[in-house]
Length: 213
Image 1 (cartoon, one colour):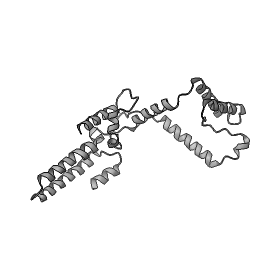
Image 2 (tube, helix red, strand yellow):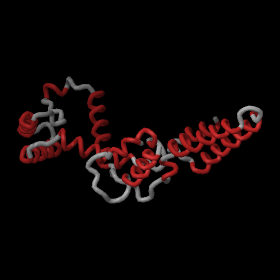
Image 3 (cartoon, helix red, strand yellow):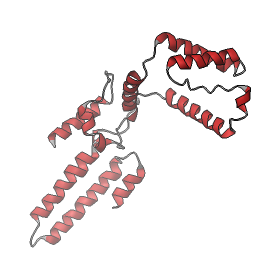
Image 4 (cartoon, helix red, strand yellow):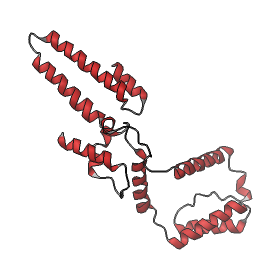
């Protein structure tokens, strides 16, 4: 358990501040399941690391071909699909590039076969891709939460509450069952109060549900 607490602290420090993040450390992965969805958990930093790693491994094009492809796609956007020469260049660039350029090239004969639903879906995908691409993958200027809310499951739920409950059961077994039940009620009341004060989960419904139960 001490090792988990060390991983928790190092994980909380890793996700903020200026530092090199070219991989997800082992101590971050150790507590990822327990900290996901908590206040203090910064998803943007992890997304940035994963996108950089995946992009470097999967998408490593030739620089000259990439520049020609970008110029051709920009020309297609400006001149439109009526520019047959540009369309042919883009098609040739896509074949040389080794993958689909993501641009639908249709001649006048094929334009009638494209349904409006497909065009709407394509436009929707483009808008979503632009929104995700322009989103700043960095830690916020004012991070939400603290180390307690970040490690609430490990610190409070797994350790403090469980240890207090087990100690109460152990010390009051036998003829002190009523006293033990009273202490258990105090423990759960304290837990509910801490939930209301710290609000450790990003989803308020989870906090309300746990406080009620």
